[in-house]
Image 1 (tube, rainbow, N blue to C red):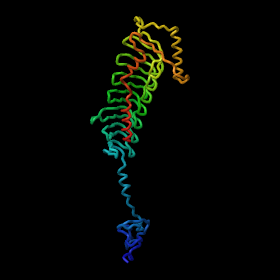
Image 2 (cartoon, one colour):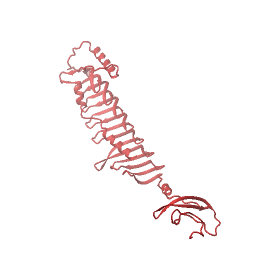
Image 3 (cartoon, rainbow, N blue to C red):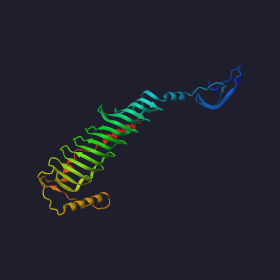
Image 4 (cartoon, rainbow, N blue to C red):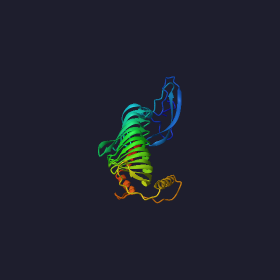
Length: 333
């Protein structure tokens, strides 16, 4: 029996002796006592089910498991070299508690880049985002971020040449802002959830101006349309971007009028009644659709509704690029 003169450190299930290192026998001539014991199984040479008893001598520290050692070394805090993520993104900057926190640069897999402040692994604070445009970086947004989305004041440059300067919330235009469209038209006023909503002013390229209320990105409620070139104005009520009723007259007093004479008796009372009905309809008090009457400029041959529909063409709200940026920010989290 090869083990008869050695302390019993294990027992075999099968026909093999314990493997080397599976137990730690007490050396002869020492007074150490066994202080810790345990059992486990080993597999060697294709044979499993080998039970092993192990123990350590008193006063001896067990070495730390290797995975714990490497895990401690992998914890990131403070300034750190470039870290490559599994999704193809890479980050270089500051960390806290193993999360991106502080100043840093995040380069996305598609080549776009964010440089600025982070908090709890998300863009938070002031930062700049560049979009990859056919291999070249184009400045897309500079301003505030909150919880990984645009928030606060910032400027967004669209690929078609449009530009928005103003307030953001939850990644959308929200609050007061100025939108310059690619054709030169400018809207300045209130925004909500990425749409014109509230009081605002629309400046046309030809000098004409609309000043009034918006709702869900359309003219809604009272407003005034100024026809600068013809020195005329239209004060009326709009519903879903369409002029419903109003007064059409000269902008400047003392200028000879070229407008046709109205043949309507008591026009002020009629307009007030119609405006009241429209207000009730907008508020959902009354139902049904009321026929719309148009006031036409007989010399120009074009209705107020047609004129504004033409002037509103050629510009729109660019949402697609903003959604693309959302996708990039989500991938970087």
